[in-house]
View 1 (cartoon, rainbow over the protein chains, first blue to last red):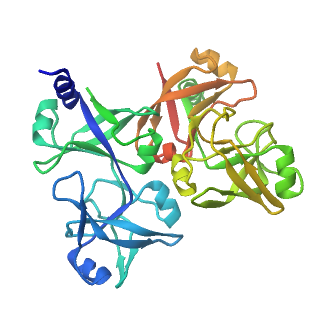
View 2 (cartoon, rainbow over the protein chains, first blue to last red; view 1 turned 90 degrees about the vertical axis):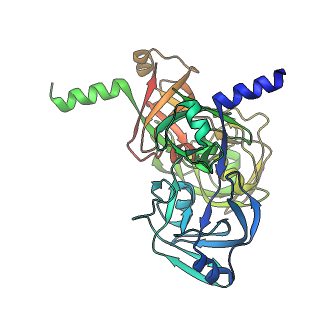
View 3 (cartoon, chains in turn orange, green; view 1 turned 180 degrees about the vertical axis):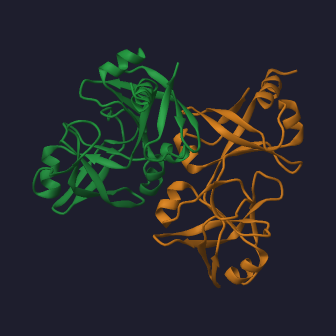
Length: 199
Length: 199
């Protein structure tokens, strides 16, 4: 085995790639129609297979401020979700609870605005709880199971151990840690940085 | 000893109070004169003895954006310093290096604007490196010395171990951890939260 292959093999068994998620929105098909006059148009694929950033963008409007040109991710979902950082929440005037994606019960609402209209969401705003997307093969290799909480050491400019990182295992997932921008900046993340799940 | 006193005594020996520092500016006496037409006016004392938030505020202007109404801290210093988060840097269009306060060599510049004029700084912009202000008595009790790097466990809603926290010991200091808002939000800091220095 070549040295580079060996190094890569070791890396894959010990380290996990870090990714930072900027603020973004998930909408339903019906909401896409109201906002854009049509469904979502894929622009570029995301790291998770089948997921894409749409060509369409929206404004997100809270009681204290708004963000223009916010990314919309596809495919459309059964329920809308607006993922922002706690810092973003201060700008909007909304305190986002820290939640796992999909857990929108009793979260605050917000208004979305597209070129064709507005959609007032009664709930769906959250700061995404930090998590690791993990393919079942990687989870088995590392002895981890779905929903397990782990500690994650970052190999970044401002090193941190994140303590409450949720493992999410699914055959569609490519293994990667998802941080929001508060977390990414707090640990000095740069594209390509790695983390390690601590025993 | 009453239970409450006992608990407080134990707390003080094991835990350190966390504080979050928002974006702020330090200026020289001459710069204060140019910006405000007079020196700084104390508005309210800060946790560190002798330090104060001034009544005066400035705009901070970078190549991509600006912040209005930014806090100015006194007393005046020998050299200007602008402390922002990495997130703030994205708004301004400046990448702040992570530095200890006072270490301004080769940092980026920025323009300040007050009611009486502008001051163009050739350097001084940084993201403050996380640190613990520590009174010598507390440092002795915990076996720590000035400039030592320690790990800090936060007891917060999104618990984290910060790994590169610099201890700063001075007789004028009241013992407290200083985080910026990226760090504070990444660990889910709320006023009154505590941290613990790990052995």
